[in-house]
Image (tube, rainbow, N blue to C red; front, top):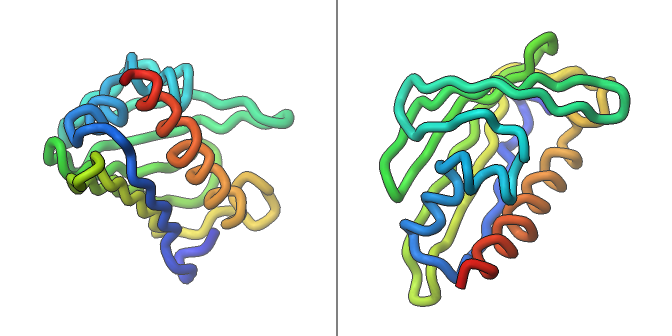
Length: 146
């Protein structure tokens, strides 16, 4: 992924209130049920930082997150980088109430290029990953809470 690429945008309408979606994307106990199962902690507070490792196909990806904006239950932004790899990005979650529940829009914006030679850093991997997490995992998680 390159800084010159357009941001990755993934959207999903969820049959849950903005408060329920907000909890799902900010409460570490809920996040581990649909997102990454080893998130040690998370707080939607400006300046909060967390780190956790994902081992995939023989490589370690130490995720480094830092919250830069949090307006419950409307908007969450955090920096996202990987220790030991070039590249820097941030993700924005925007929640809007709808008649059926909540429209969630995720935007992943690259600030500094990621390595081209690592498949996990390719645009199609990012798009596929966010679609999987939001359109499948988060949706299924919230549906089972009904």
